[in-house]
Image 1: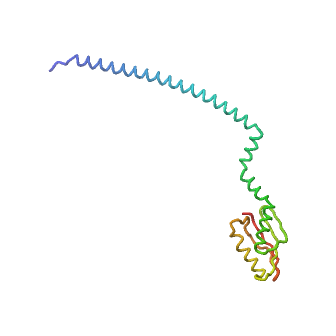
Image 2: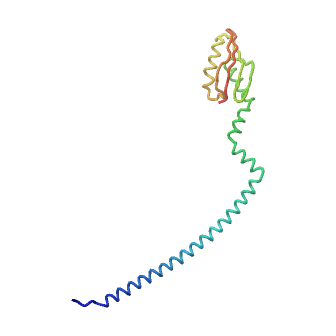
Image 3: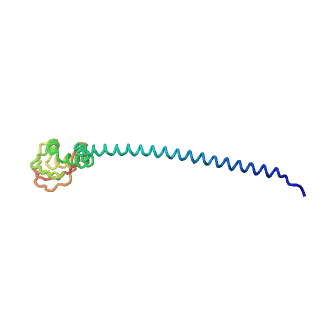
Length: 174
């Protein structure tokens, strides 16, 4: 049998001790660094929380201002208010329809507007170059194709006459 070298075991024991000691020192240093880093993060979070509270208080003060409340309500209901505004432009509708009726030689007799729907009583007479029904058909075909048309022709509800035709049409706001 051969003799076992005792110095080999002594060297191994010392190196294991130093590795363990190095790992312990590393762990202590890493723990200290993590503690300091966490403390700085907590301090920054506390500062940010204070700023957020200041900003929230400022926002609440602004929200209590009547002008801001009115604007907030306007922004919330902007679409509804604009569509309502568009539906209430009756003088614009009258002048628009009057101009288009003149273009097709149609005379309007009555006008009824309710919530985006216009009922118009019209009359057309036979002229030198066209019969009354031709003028009506031309208007009913061409008006909806016009890019500037504000209305869709929904239906013709009444129609009577020959050389002088009286009819009522329903127009709906686009």
